Image (cartoon, rainbow, N blue to C red; front, side, top):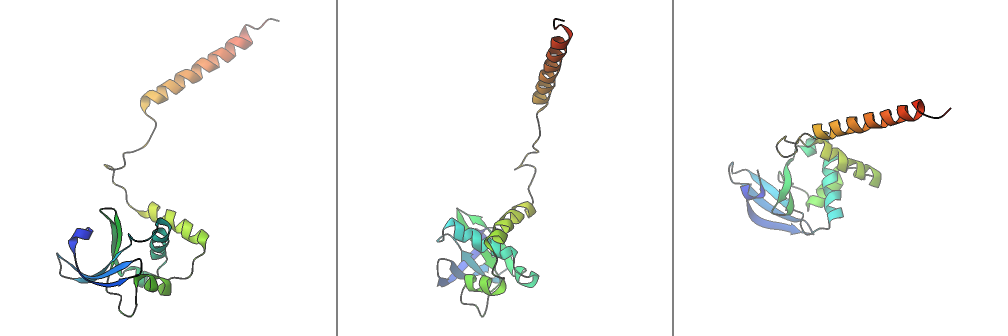
Length: 152
């Protein structure tokens, strides 16, 4: 899915995070779309890292998150009883220390699946390996020659 898969119906709140009542076009399911593009990068990262700290039942309410046309967004079920996306996150997650939030950022990246096409297997090319072996053998030969032909 992408942000284009949702029809934004009504702007419900704009506190830096624009929250829209929306509808998933394919299924007609009513959801909320939260656009984070009016925040600074650290604020966006802080909010996204809090999603990973949500208790499991609340984390299941997050349907999708991503970036569409340079705009970060989060799609959730309707968050009835909460004035904003930020309020929901703050009420459902413990106040994490800065160290924990920093660690959560890297855990999120490690858990994301990576396709082979977009991230080819990284390794040492065969030519570089052969070149390294040749240099090592040349160095070893030089060391042996110095000890074998030194004056006595």
